[in-house]
Image (cartoon, rainbow, N blue to C red; front, side, top):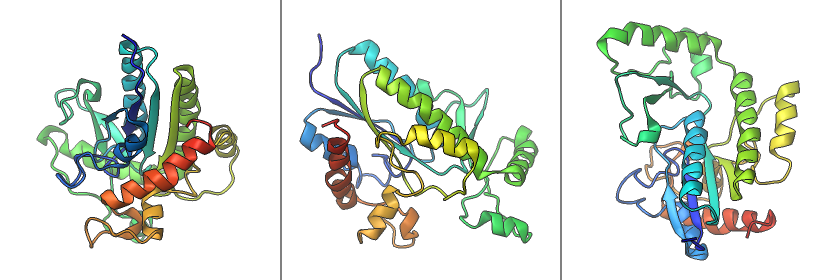
Length: 263
């Protein structure tokens, strides 16, 4: 049977996760407030600690799966991107803690949680997270993180992310999915570079991807005087409560969906 009510699909990291700070955020994230208008069903697959590759990969899986189950159901996808410093490893004998099969054996890693990690690294200060690893690979993990920090380039990460978004947009269009893609916290502003600019023009050509350097949900919430859930969090990367999520849905998502002809 064809379903005519919309599916509001969401993916991202802790900034969009219903399970972050339970029970405060349960069914109180922005897709649920968008659903107040659309009167559909919310599928929120955001998981705290996610990296961008995981967000795009699982979104492709989930939307393909939904299309197999319900080929004609309207879908609105809200994709929140996260810190580019995060990447992931495959661990053969260690399933993702969510136990969802689509998460498989991928695990997010992040060599530092410090915003000033590069300056600290150059001055010889410690930047690395303390993380309990399996005894057999602890030393290799530390070396991998040190090497990643040494060779890390924001241009490398951004170019590959934009390339992924080019193909992701075509995938969403091919499957008849309405969508908005935006940052959690703003991405680092980068200088001109050929590949960066080439892919950026293609990604931003129709307004359904909000410029990653110019806008972030957390920055918007801070600028609009919402308070983070924890008073110790920096406001521009803080986690915000239901009041910010509701306003974000009403003041940003709904107008943007209308502006891009999707509502």
